[in-house]
Image 1: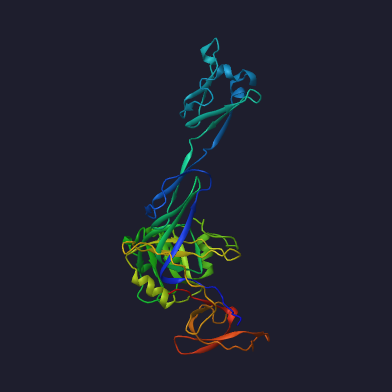
Image 2: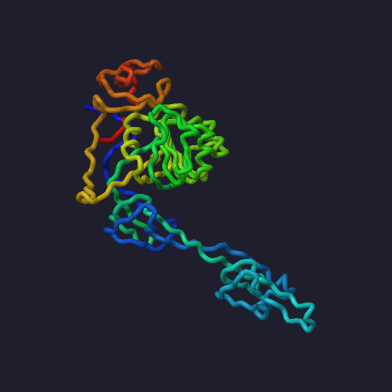
Length: 376
């Protein structure tokens, strides 16, 4: 029998994940296989070359390029401090003396007797790669990074912006259809991951930025507010590098959409616990979902990385989300799976299913217009 299955979001109380952590250039790995790590713990380190500053000493000293070595105080490879003398001439009359001072603290990298230039380089910047999640190192990639494994609760979102961060989960609203307002945000939420309900306004985001909230998780947002936050329209490229003051994750979509009851209940069950979040999203090939990871302790026997059984298709009782208008964002359960093709409003024949919503209403939906909310 053929199956029609739309991969959906994972919302699960317990799963095992692996996240590869990789440096942008070769460096040093700081941990070993079997080590337990915390989300903010450095697991690898690399040095990014400092910025280069060229100085044309020949012009400034008024000498020929092939003569500049005679006037140098600092030689190639030597350290130099800002405003320390690099080179000087030695005239017979001291009033005509010229001193060239270093504009930076760094190193004399090289000099050229062809151009008369000296190149100064700032000290390297140390880049530390964090573990991102609390877990165990299961693989080391020499000079590149590591793979971290964690037993956790996992919630994937529809869309997000902002990079990786972590903090204590705070559920700020009472119900999944409550909008998150500025009044919900308190000073003690600084550095925390704040969960709202159906909607997030521009005013609430401004208050969150003022307080220093690490992350915001809500059902929906108006696209105009997102544009105002970013200052530009997002394209189809991957997100996750935006600098807006916090990481934002939408669990349902754009508009005022109540957070799915299952998702809200999972957040509520873990309020007060530490979570790692990432807003990185890619909607084209190689889909990347924004995520909230709530790592669990290994004290009860360690991580058991049992593979989840492979799905064969949609089943009656599966929770699903509608991903096309006019019912976009609504959550329900599959109540029937007709086997015959049915004609839909576009006059095409398509495979459909019946979805029963919490208010008791039933709708017939093309199978391509839903996604399954996965998870135990």
